[in-house]
Image 1 (tube, rainbow over the protein chains, first blue to last red):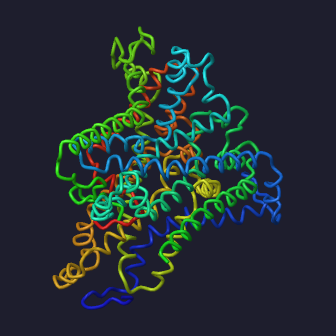
Image 2: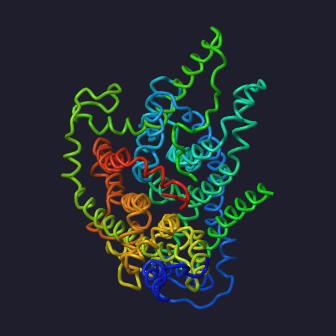
Length: 297
Length: 297
């Protein structure tokens, strides 16, 4: 298969010509920035001047930096909450909309709608629901459930959880489609056999559905973990430019932007934090890969 | 793999009912009612916040935002007012420039590159493919500082070209097109060779037309990507004349001069509406795009 066979012949340079623009862009705006980030992370470069080699200084600095710990803790907490939710809730949703009953197409599309909204629009929509004078607080106050508004957006810990809820809400429909595809490949005869053996709906779900879609669960887990580590816009819109009160709801991307492009413009240090973020996402990629490999054996 | 299974062949978790005895039928109806009830509950969760934003956007100036669920003086006035107090059209114009460039460059270059990647018999094919897949592992947030430095060294800071360029050809689109071209039958290519078509003619007249579905996916995703992106334009653009829609929305929400939720809501809904129209018109392509380049159009 490696050589052109049969009738199709081409000059040797033609494929390279076809590939040149696309590959050039990828090298310039994906490969090179990554290599450059690695290089910069070992220098004291600033935004307005090049740097000199400083070894692992930036990395040891991060380990001593309380701001880094805040960002790391927030990002990890975010991932720890969002991933399990986005592995299981969309599966439940997919099972709910899988059966072809009248009007189900409408429900499927409706559940997908938050996916197509931009993160900024989603942020604005939820800001209006969660503000101290927003829908939830107003209704709860009028029903006398609470006497003071819940600080959904004004307390940094609650803000973080509000943002998580928004991320989950936006991700539900997206991963639902993944699961719908996986569920479509489960042979119906399995369910029929189980039903004949007297297995109830719950039993069938756990004994047939879950094992059948396990590879998809791993994929969804990996994808949602990586996107949870990358979260920025939701917190930026809900909590404001500083990342919540006192910046206490900042995540790693927040910190990278602030350190690298803020007042001091420390590209070197920001690059080191970037590499740490990359390594964190890499752990999840490899973990997902490993687990799915183990499954095949 | 992750395309939606055709409706008729989807596995059905609830097996066909046993001979409909009275009790069996009753249980079935109850189950169906429960399913619809759950569906409607989820509908409120998924669409409620969006609908609430919409209702706020059409509330008249004379009424309180919380006077009942439905506005008593519905009006489109807020949509007019928001364009008067904010250069919304300019933001949309800027966004459309970036989006048009992104759609054109992604379609053309991803198709060309994907074609080369799908053809056998040239040196370095495996290495190029490996490099491309590897770049998928770099989260944007981990390379954005270096990306900004690259854009700055090209003198493109605060330009729309600078917003567009890094996303001009996405790796995912290259892989989608590669998969689509791999599925083109060899006979078709050979027939074209026999007819005397040269490589470029084979590409434009045989391959591209047989990959229309994948091309549509590339079109839609690059358009949406450009329309919805926030973090990168936030980094590149500084003068509000160049703002894209999402950045404009942020300033609209942050402006203390506005402080009228009706206007913010109108802006958010105006930004969401085109995406929703696109989604409902081209739904099947949206669901096809989910998944990782494993398309077989």
